[in-house]
Image (cartoon, rainbow, N blue to C red; front, side):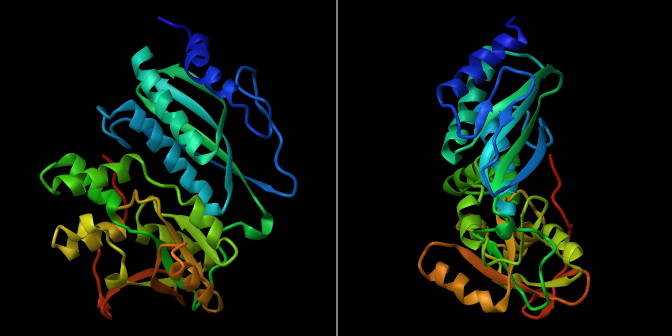
Length: 321
């Protein structure tokens, strides 16, 4: 059985050493990494843990597990308007097999290279399978996207489509729910969600607040409401749904998934009325895919309406496996 240090050297340290990253003064192999934050920037840091059987199926492909783990963490950087820099990895493994680690590290570094983020340290230990990733990014103080700066009258928008995360879970648990082409699309949305870093770069000078949708649109928008001491109204009929969800011919179910299913990793953000024209221009130019779905209002809760009438949620937030 290879030792911890042999595993780190074989699957993680060697890969990173071949492509040294900017700002890494000392990387994997010492007690701490030494990192140089870009001048004039603030450091954005987030950490999250994915547990087998809770955040992904126990029999999932390790390459896809790695991509999902890093991509969902990168989504937190996007939510703050931060550019990726570095990450650390803590792996808890029931068994350290070379085949599993080779596949996992392949997915991890494939994703890391795609989004320009460097592994700078971590840990391995024995136990039930779980992956903890801490991501670090840089953002100019004036462009930081936060939850506490929304105002009454701001428009609420989401990027791309919502509801695919819950639809993907249904497809994984019951292959008969969707046709093959839609099931494949949803599988990709589950294991390879796109952290909206590009979109965050477009909106960070225009949005008043933002976050990523992980626990469900209503539950996450409520965080903006709580932080900004406001309420919000969502126009359910305006929610952007993918062709996969439309294929169900069951809009009520699709809307439930879009509002409370979670695991979408899209951005939900608010825009002052005077900045909406700039957002509309980005959309018209094909640079940004986003939809106005509601408005910030006085109050303290998120209200859902369908064509002006109350829309009742069956549940209010994401439930894991």
